[in-house]
Length: 65
Image 1 (cartoon, rainbow, N blue to C red):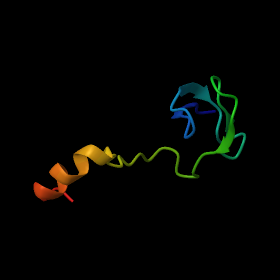
Image 2: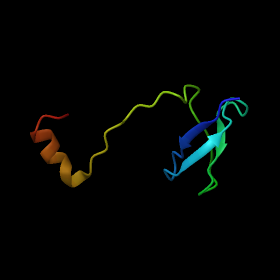
Image 3: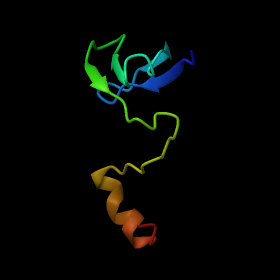
Image 4: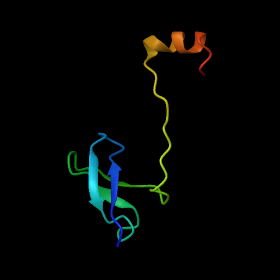
């Protein structure tokens, strides 16, 4: 069975060697203990840009968003 490394959506801790197929995507974070269900497409990763409020004006002026 394949194992996966997944970041916790709550605290960002990288949980390693999880059997997500066996648990239908459910995991308990090793650091914060939060129980969450990872997307069924846990192999695909999409980067989402995150901006601080103080930098948002600069980003918009540069036309990045």
